[in-house]
Amino acid sequence: MKEFENIVIGPSAVPSLVITVLLMIAIPVIFFICWRRKHRAQTNIRYLIAGAVGFLVSARMLELGVHYFCIMADNPVSRFINGSTAAYVLYGTVMAGVFEECGRHIVLKYIMKKNRTRENAVLYGIGHGGIEILAVLLPSMITCLAVAVLFSQGDAESALSSLKITEETAAAALPTVQAAAAFDYGMMAMNVMERLLAMLLHIGLTVIVYYGVVRARKAYLPMAIVLHMLADTFPALYQRGALPLWAVEVWGAVWTAVIAVIAVKLYGKMRAATSSESAS
Image 1: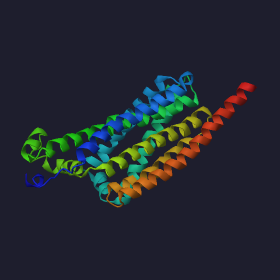
Image 2: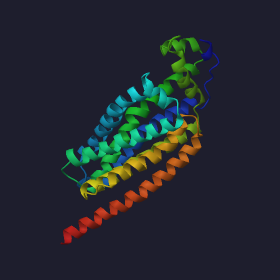
Image 3: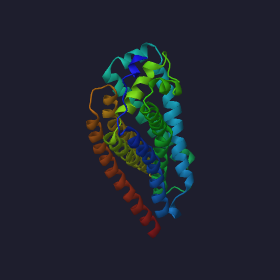
Image 4: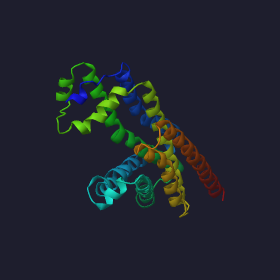
């Protein structure tokens, strides 16, 4: 397989990937420990677990099931979506917003009926964002690290054999090998920053959905869906090769800030409402 013979692993690829893997594990752990230590009396671990399970069911089972038909399978619908950048971006953002935010809404309204505190809403968001790192992104990073280690030893044939890459799977495996070879400290910083922003985004969206649930305000679910769609617009365009990565990061930072401002305001309103109810 000649396409792999010229793969050269950069000198910083392996160390930067090792640090990235460690930080990916540390991010959700630190978020959880810090929040739990500060609000132990107001939080319940079940909300962390509910956030993780809610993400896995809504995004990794139900949403992926729709993606299989609309994106992966070969049919008129998938050909239309994959053949149009506008359709692809609209489809991807709508699916992410609807499945994840409706998933939050269903779990918080109909399943997690006890211990409804604003602190538990944040814990739910940590579970949602944390499991996305551990179950979706971390495995791909570990795969890149394994690829980088094997190819850095200088024997492409042995590396391909260890990774079980054959002529039939070479085309699918090549992008991963190239990504591992090009990984460096700049990519490490971008990945870590993106995950920190994503954690804050998931926490903020959870607070928005939670406020709508506990205050019986129906408008907050569609608000969360639209905000989620807007935040995902540039990442979807990047997947189509329409934007550079730096633009995606800037866009993500802007919308995370917007969502955080809204969430902090609603979080404060819940405190004010609770204080008012206690006084009366």
